[in-house]
Structure formats: structure tokens, C-alpha cells
Image (cartoon, rainbow, N blue to C red):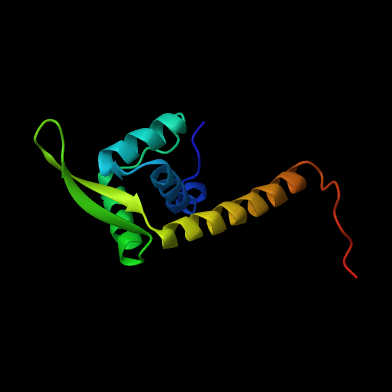
Length: 116
């Protein structure tokens, strides 16, 4: 089943930050991990990923550094900053609130408080 791209757009930053919380990664690794863990729902292209990573770096949420791989090739790795950790925690809380509300609506609204 295809997923509407607009549903994916708002969560991509959170997902990238989550991957980087676990370990430093280079771009292609992020693309592969997102694709694998999401059963191919998140299939980012490099043209989408790198502008997003540059934006996150400008915001101080991630930092990049170069490292030489075993093959001798230099790769640009990204690491999560303290600000990125705080942003991830806020985004996860926001996501949980949002998905909880969606679930309650889809399940018929059990436990809805009345407005006074």
C-alpha cells in the first residue's frame, strides 16, 4: 500500500535524528536503514536527504565530520548534538501525542473529556 507523501514529510527529521541517536552514520547508511526499518515506506533519495541534513546542521541539531573508510574512501558522517537530542525528545513526545489522538478518533473516541 502506498503512503501519502505528505504524511511522511513531517516525520523524516525525527526519524533521521533517531537513527543518529543510535550511532554516527553517513548519508547512504541513513537511506538504507530508513528503508529497511520501514519495510520500504521511507525510501529517501540523496537529493532529498542531503538538503535536509544540511538544514539540520545549520540548526545545530547535527554535526558532520569526515572519516576515511576501510576502502580508503573519505565519507562524511553525521552525529547528533545535545540540541539534536533535545529536539528528538520533543519530536517523539509530539509524535506520541499526535498518534494517540489519531488512534482515539479512529477507534471511536473512547475516553474523550468534555469541554466546560
